[in-house]
Amino acid sequence: MVRNMLRVFSLSLCGLCLLATAARAEWLEASSDHFVIYGSEREKALTEFAGRLERFDAAMGRVYGKERIKPSPSNRVTVFIVDDTAEVRAVTASKIRNLAGIYIPRAGTSVAVIPKLKGASAATQFEMAGETILYHEYAHHFMAGETQRAYPRWFGEGFAEFFAGARFKANGDVELGRAPGHRALELAYGRKVPIRLLLDFDGGVGNAKASYDSFYGQSWVLFHYLQMEPERKGQSRKYRQLLAEGRSALEAAEGAFGDLEKLDKDMDGYMKRRRLGVYVLPQDTLATGPVTVRKLRPAEAAMMPIAIESRVGVSREEAQRLVPDARKVAAQYPDDPMVLAALAEAEFDAGNDDEAIAAADRAVAIDPKQVNAYLQKGYALSRKLRDGKLPKEGWNDLRNQFLKANQIENDHPIPLVQFYSSYLAQGEPPTKNAIDSVEWAMALAPFDRSLRWLVAQQMISDKRFKDAARTLAPLAYSPHPGEHTDKARELLKDVEARMAGANEGS
Image (cartoon, rainbow, N blue to C red; front, side, top):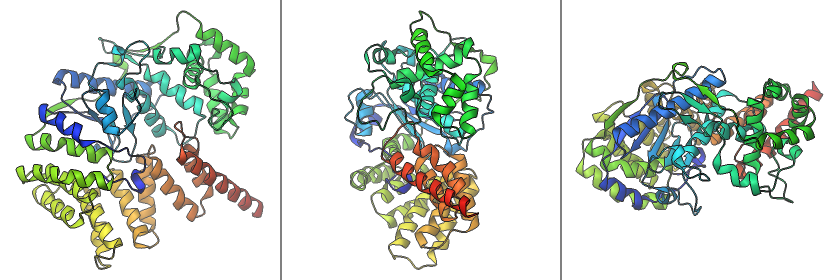
């Protein structure tokens, strides 16, 4: 997977470490309704981990009264378990010394990388375990899937921290809301965010005059306090209602919580209590599907490190270093469709379009339902068409690849997005069917920021400014701000100005 418009939030991967891991490990796959997990763990440990993830998803749905919808197989979150935190850093090419895991939300290719399983409770008092990071980020994933509304940053992070502290009891019950030990030091010694700044939409992110260290901890305290304190019952619901009515973040806070200075003092007192309450959700209230575990075929296991590297995301140069290894595996297992599809992906990432098409054709000749092969052939055809290496009639063949993938897996978001994008690449206005397809893809994968940006651009082009503003808002006020949030805010301001102009002219 080369980083491009729909993959701009990918992280690079160092393949050498993974190749060493694969050579000494037996790979297993655990498959469940919302997750597919790969690792060299014991079967029991992998099964239990998948079960914890499913119970975690069910617990959030139970708390918020949301019926959980089983996603398309390719739209599940894929979790790769590597040896240790050093390998996590190698996988992400990160220099962050205390990095314990990553999560990358993307339509059809959401991926997490965490170290060997120890359980969230196995971390030391002040560490954030890899599992805990996964729970935190999956909570954001869950929220994005349950609402199109943008929430203030404190609410998003407080929500994620509240659920990330989940504990799984031996009897199947789930406890939510345990105090996060990894936030203890920042709450004790970090610089406190003033309450009005904490409650503002961006939580003080844009405040260049000060650096506040306790934002996450304070967000957890406030979210927990509103969830668990009887005197504040119903205030969180009222707050969300006021936001939905269009009130500003501070207006909604004052309307729901009352005197904010008193709220601040109450939070301080709450944090100092010796014991804080937790939610206990009994196992029989959490409906989850089965977990199946299988040992990967020797061909799949041999290609696994290359597949991981492609899945996380590579540059052209990284892909070119990877291709020889992919070709060696394919030469050893020339009739395995998964291997051939992975080879097609590696060839495409390296810029070898003809080789990618040939490998993809071999894969689907053996297994006509090998979705990734159709996608990789489509990507390669698209690049050849853009470069003028194929006649214009080839655009129909290109779109046919994505239609074939869609017929195999109707709710796989990538074929829907690529069908739409083919018109942009051709320089033609997208058809209504193509626009409907990309908007449905966003509904299937609302957590994909670059897809959300793409849909917003189309809405602006169609002068659907209200829809565009609603689509941009979660980007503009993302819980993980960065360059993309700045661009989204600028565009959102422009859209809102155009909306106001349209209203004045009506």
